[in-house]
Amino acid sequence: MQRRQFLQIAAAGAGAWAAGCGRARATAGKRSVATFCELCFWKCGAVATVEDGRVVKLDGNPADPLSNGRLCPRGNGGTGALYDPDRLKTPLIRIGERGSERFREASWEEALDLVARA
Image (cartoon, rainbow, N blue to C red):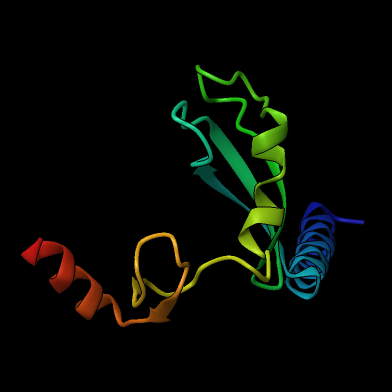
């Protein structure tokens, strides 16, 4: 076998291997996204594991000097808070007396205008 043939075979093998790895990553739909935790005032650095557009796990970011790669139980439970069916997704405006707990949904524009007038 000549040197040129060896290099051609090696390049073809490396290309096939790389294509296979790329395809496996694409079908898995899994990626890591650097972010930070907003559940308390510390704002620890985190790494979110995202599968098919949905956060499935939060880990501490090892590059964050504050958390040193760890998250507290509150931070680890962040995915539960994110996908809680009772989580507020639109602003609410009180329609009853204070304490009556009667609200209506409003647009962001309406809510911000109300706050700006207050």
